Length: 205
Image (cartoon, rainbow, N blue to C red):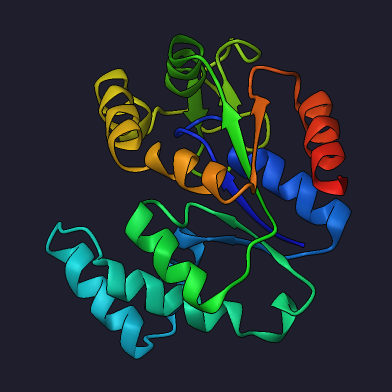
């Protein structure tokens, strides 16, 4: 099963991807993870990507597509995979179609106001633990006792900008995959386990 997850930042793609990949025994492939791995291993594409990141620029499509193409050729992808954060644009989707055959595209749809509250309420710890102010009233980490902080990415102005960029660039993918008959839209406001059940049911059809 080769699956793509679409959804605005904070829609729950990462959480659902972990659950679904575990159930289907397929790797969870995110652009961010691939970039970090290639930069750490100092591959040619990794070095190229780092040069753009270090200068504050977006990594160009051809570099991201090259990294993704290499990743999908690895042995753990033989039985399928779940793509999270790729493709981000129709151009990337068209390139992906040249070297991969996607079975289903799951669009996790969620109200913008709920999305904003979900992201801006996140709090992180230096140990890697994450919390949400709706369920964790303290500003101290339960695991290590350090003070929690809000990532710049999770601040309201940044969140609104990220959602705006998503709407401009990534929403056209919904039409693109709908025309291919591969799109399934699910309600992202559903409780985590319930949403996983809905997605698994759709993927089994």
